[in-house]
Length: 130
Image (cartoon, rainbow, N blue to C red):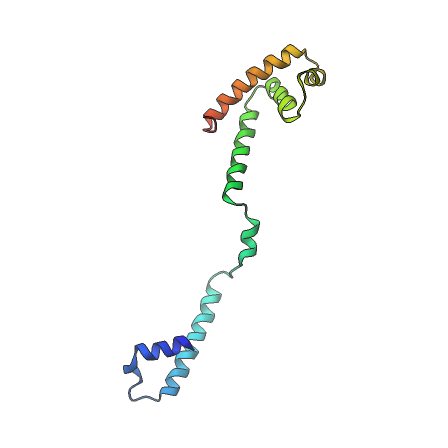
């Protein structure tokens, strides 16, 4: 209704010599038809519920970063990856990792050292390490 009256106000010359009521009804009908066609022409709007499901920007950054760290871990030699997974991700001490992996404690320490260096290089290649 508001748009109909606005058009009549913007174009007063159209109303001269015509029945105003018929013109207003025609304009209102055409506006309703146009609005209906416009809704059918584009996809239905979803609302804010869908946006709540999408992760926020910082969550996306974390997901991409964790994916890159997983790739970097996968690029390590198997024995290095095995030691890092036991010590850092498994939370095992050197002694526990030594027992679970079946290697001496000194080997766990040296593999951890070299694995961390290799991981740092792999992360630098991916632009994640300073």
